[in-house]
Image (cartoon, rainbow, N blue to C red; front, side):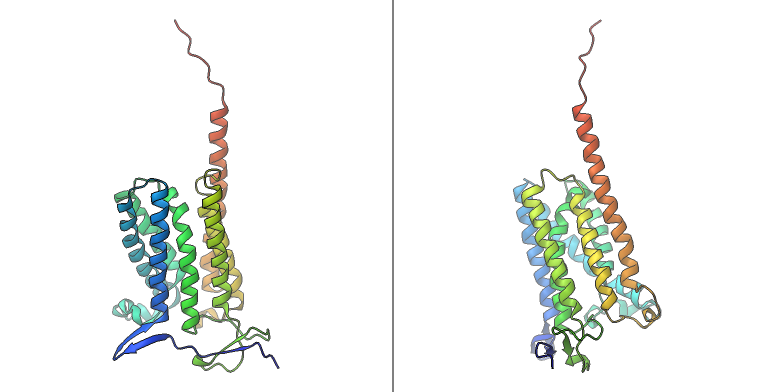
Length: 279
């Protein structure tokens, strides 16, 4: 008898007024944007970046993340259905958001933001934006937990969750918590890098570390997740893992490039300067 196993029947709704329901998932999304804005605002003030640029980045990131996450789900996980029901791509309230699509959407939105609004480089922005994005990833997984979705396979471990709302009768791995805690550790680590080490770390390092840590965690947790779509059941690696591999490679590439660029700059600065000869 495993006394620590948890019967999980939490309601996805916080409260309802008539046909209007306020859901935990929506609250966690809102918290992601609120804390993300507050973090970016403090970073911009600390580094003397115009505060109005922080207001603009919130709009760009909100549109990019939501549109990207929705299109990512429709394209990567259920293309056959949505290709025949295009109008339902707009039905975000029915659920279906993919984090990999959200990441792509954020990158595209940030590119346009940097071109149209920002006075900083694209990589400079990425190095700072990954801090609140890590926290947002934690909040979103907590929203998944409250929705009793994206959980793992059967487990005999004492902290298994029985997701009663989904009709489960045996404990499952609470993979939402596993991922969420990994992202929370990433957020704390990146925050420490920024506060203590940003003047020493090469530009692009934090972006590379973020991608490497986040998507290795995602790749590993996917091994104990139940398939999100039927077509994944016969795959050696599921869609989440396949989409994580390019991000892991990109993370390594960012870090290598960052250190090489820093090394070249130091060598250039160390070169002796010869006085110009006078004719």
